Image (cartoon, rainbow, N blue to C red; front, side, top):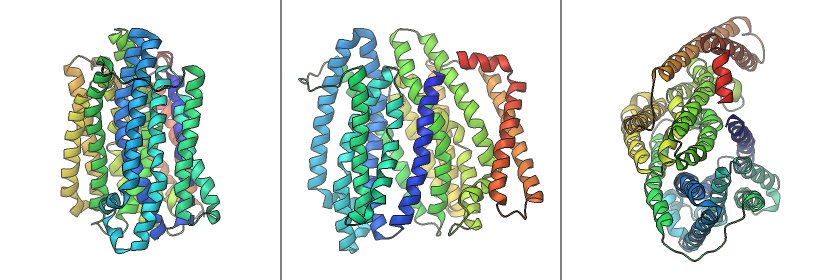
Length: 508
């Protein structure tokens, strides 16, 4: 399990790093003018559909359903089930693609009403979106193939696929002179990456399980069960996207710089969420689905508890750093050129607010796995929608006094609400037991976080006093924080938890 987590996490980390490089090229070549605005709208439409239907709702319903059929009735029944879902999925995506191409002007009026005043920009946005929209069809098939591979305990290709988006866009941006505009280059990069990701996943699945084929449609119990789980999962994924839209809309009413502070703080906050939370959750879901199908409910609970421990072990350093030295991190990473130290302070405060909710952000994927593995997508949706309601209400209440920091703080409170409700529902239904041993583990993690935060604070103060005149003061401070923090954290873990706990955690 640990090896698979490191596989997914490693590729996710590489994807995030190449994503940073892609953003640098986008900023340098596209800038922030009308062409850039048109491209980001063209990217947003298929991306929101992808987040709702493909990687969000579909994956939550598909992996447990496929694992259940595969475990109970064997490979033949699972292949027939996959063939029927593939047929339905491809047909629905082709219809959606045709409708989108035909009614793109009307869709653009809803998505980007401000473009109506600029006919050229609106025309460009429609043209670029028609280029990028087929990416949704390809990435939906990638999600289908990736779920099948995950059930087979093969995670590498699905985790690595997103790297192609960044590489493809960088390649086409480098050749922007050969396209009508830099926006066209970026849009074609998105589409080309969809084909590359499809080829990677299809090739892996063809070698190890066989690609799904067209099959006569039949609304049997398996198909009905899949759609019964897909409906609530779609609602939950849609709710998250609505909350993200609320962030963008509300932030436009704040002073200049608020959106930038949110963006840069969120980029750093998403690093542990993607590399730790999503990686562990991706590995845990098929593991729990397989065990529950085999009636090994104790084993499923132990796997989830182990995932919680891994998540906290890797996440505590990020929480301690983001809460204690956010300004130092922001200055070292971004404070150069047009990004001033004042901008770094604004982004640092926003990062600290996000960090209050970092633990539930990284734990939520593993927490909901116990419901998804049992093909219950409705219960997590109840918790998610409640958290989103708290989130949006607090955004409106705090935006006036705390600006973008209030938006980030509202996000943190909302995700805590979500996680606590999920844990409450799981404990009430007997899916999770919070015994004394695990509660003591939580206390120890809290103590290690406090010790590490104190170490970060002392290192930052020392650096400010002794290295203030150095030209690369901020960068050297970040290196000292990373090195000193690693030593202190390792010692704190060994002292509080002991070597035996670490060995048992790794060996399972």
